[in-house]
Image (cartoon, rainbow, N blue to C red; front, side, top):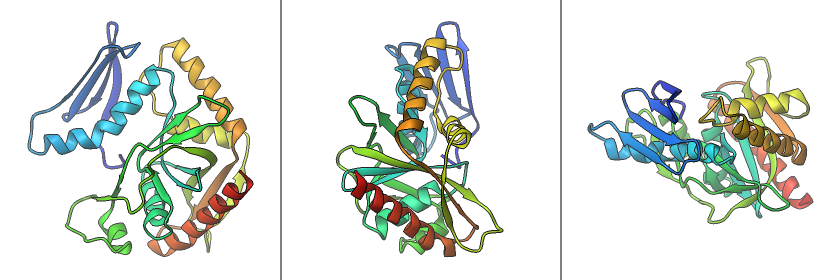
Length: 254
């Protein structure tokens, strides 16, 4: 997540290794038939293991040629919207707003898993709770218990996959007076996908070729947008309203 420890990838012989430095280590072979995930013994180890599990799942999915994105997602009427963005871009925040206030189904908070089987690309439900900053939790009416990030069950967790309708890249810009949602195409879409794709191995051509083909299909299959707004929770509701209208119109078209 955005407040995770230092993370690094490497290889030891035929094994690939992912390390959350001082916290946990994941080892696997390239086929992901053998895996080992160990959490450093400490207070709260069970909570750490639970928090990292979606990311472990995403890394192993990459070895199997599947696509997982560092992003949040919501759905309405069987159609999903994915939010991508850099660290602290507000992905969890806008998904929580749309689920808690707007009533949309919550699919993922930090790791979005995609299914390319069949004629459509589907978003799989991978998480059922939000991890929010205390100020965001308070704005949504949740009790602030003093944690760096508060974990709360989603108000409307999705029970089944949803067809991907659109992707929204989030960006802050202090010069804009009000949130702006605009269509993007070409290189910006691939740049957003490349930054968001969760990878376990960087030197296996066969795995990276499958990844590239699927990302190209994704970029061609659904529209991409950029949601630009200034920092501050006063922009949360109008930003979510723009995203909700996009999701509504996408659902009507589908």
